[in-house]
Image 1 (cartoon, rainbow over the protein chains, first blue to last red):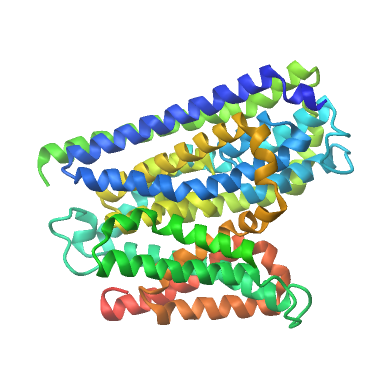
Image 2 (image 1 turned 90 degrees about the vertical axis):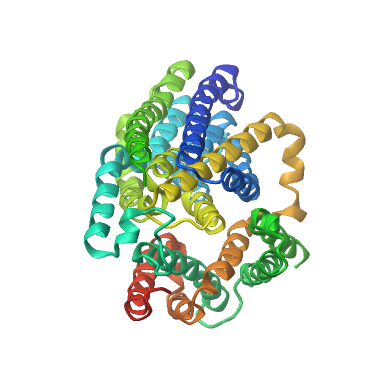
Length: 258
Length: 226
């Protein structure tokens, strides 16, 4: 069965879809770059955005590749490759595949039990469960963003709604503040979950859970502070593009040493 | 802003939505169609009643979390970035932090055309990186597999997300450390006392974010910034 799931036609189908998405990305990239130049943005800034995003994404992408490898044992390589390249989410994918396998009557997600019917059912369920973001974007992205920017014009200071660099004074718009706050809340939730996991993960207040994520987060935060110090105080601005990736790498190395 | 630029941006934005919608629909059709096509090659169509059952048992949760993701992340990503991110996925562990980081470096303000462009560039570059890394990885699966799955490297890959959020935490907490301590303390206590919520962290982002936005609003009212 696994050899069927790894056959050339499946690679071809999944490869074509991934290629399509890659082309879409290139189109958006080129359009945004051209638009940036057209409205007079600094070319160096645009290039730095691309460099920093690429370096930023390499390590998480390798992590995602591990997800492909993990799933390839039961679903073959092409399908997990597609799923994780296109709207996949590492932490959900395995879970959905597992739940889908149970629904079609497999005792677990494994190559030994896989049948063609089970596979196509699991594949369809994996596609359907995660497609809502695209559907919502299709119908509501435009109206939702329009509504948000409309609200801003009413409530906020004019510089926000005008949105040009020249006239944005010292005063921050609340949109920016809210975005930063949301992100602080998001990061707090994750770091809180590591602390909770350590203290109570193996039973309330036993302090027997995994300490590694906390240490990794601390180390990578410390390294980040060093990077920010160097780029802000020592004028090594080029470091900014690599600061997150570098911090992560050192944080992850700590996990190996521990 | 000059009239010509305004017109250009208007057209750019309009086209972004047209292209975004077309490619979202096309990807959707391919993604849902692929299992049927693969099924016909393998000689068995998907079992639709099992799909329906499976959807009720696991899919409904994803549907709710997708709606939340859409509402929370679309303003962060803008239009172009939004369409792309929801096509390419891996939002929380990559796309969102990536776009936030790019904004941080370019120092653009939310709701501006500059910000829209920076976040689109960032999401597109990030998505392409993943596609290339995965394609190379799949090509070299045979030699890579033993290395990537080796015992020694497992702890590193198990901690990609903590490493990411540790670095981002420093970057964002320093903007207002006293503010950040409140959600951090509350969320830590919550997870300490109710460890069963740890598996629901992606949903717990919502109350945590709402609380922080509320607090930030109070500070903003007073100081006009964070």
